[in-house]
Length: 216
Image 1 (spheres, rainbow, N blue to C red):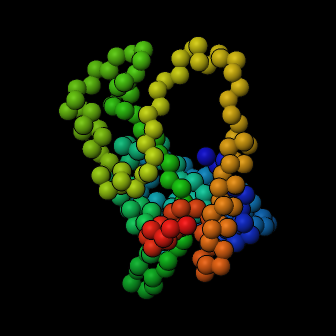
Image 2: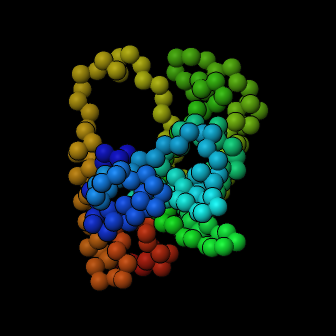
């Protein structure tokens, strides 16, 4: 995912650098952050660690992934309440942390990518090995992720296991550099669409409902 995203604009690099500086994760003596962040927290992370918080509120993983990618591996293994706190920043692109003494708002516009097994044993729909999970077990496993959160994930892909013949194939797959060129062209097209608008819009999630309905 990070290898196909377009380079930072100066504004994005500045925003990301500010967040990493506030969080204390910016390398000493470093200038602007030059690579889009890729954050992959462990499933034992707390909701405060993911969304941000503390007595003196600090940015969480959703803000550290601003302008980059937040990857949650083994999504059902996270405590149910932890991923749920992402619902608001996924919609608004910001996180507001309120404390008695202060209220702070951090940017949190990131691309969410998650991964999970299809069942507790991991072999449901596998082409080579049989699954021993019962339908209630599979349903209970999937139900660990709420419907509203699943609705905020636009693309769902079933990835089957790669067999030996596919792994030793001599075919040359499309490289990340080629995909990245297409992504850059798509974003340039989007920028040209909204030339003259107050907001710099380079991808679909930044569009308002009115802009989506308006014919081109």
